[in-house]
Image (tube, rainbow, N blue to C red):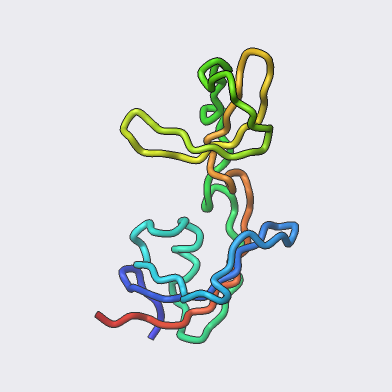
Length: 143
């Protein structure tokens, strides 16, 4: 039984950057369960598992465009420093959560601080990165 679009599957995985740095793994946890083709995972991962057999391991080399996308300058925003209040003490590289107008919160990274502004990067953490996943199919869930 090979994986088809629409199947619910469980996989173990390890995600690495092209320099070998591991950024995520299911090791020591339950397998990742998702519905293939539903957009629950990045497109390159979703497409990469199609046709896998139970017990099979694949290495998925996923370009940035099929992962979290390229970094976008539109996702960089400079905010007047006074909006952070007088006690603002964060540093470049730190993450903050900001609230959007619709009430949702998103993580941002401080990428620059000067006398007048704090520049925030709202790109996904792995945007612009090519990713490599080692994926083992554990189960195709039968409904």
